[in-house]
Length: 102
Image (cartoon, rainbow, N blue to C red; front, side, top):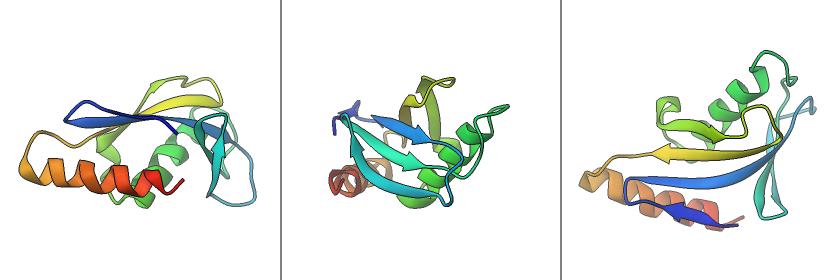
């Protein structure tokens, strides 16, 4: 899985499977983090649950996460903004480590 580090944010690809029985990270699918989401792909519900779930898993506020590409697709690019403080740089290091597990 490729993780882009801008110094203040991380960006990575996700492959979302909506209408699943539970929210779960399933591993890697074609170079993207595969995530199952319980919400249907209607009216942005799956996107909202995807952002909420990723925020919970990465232990960052939902406001730090945005879908920067693919909002209407299963293939999305997620950006996690953490800022340019010492705390933000430490969070980037931890996030990269957490994401590297997949």
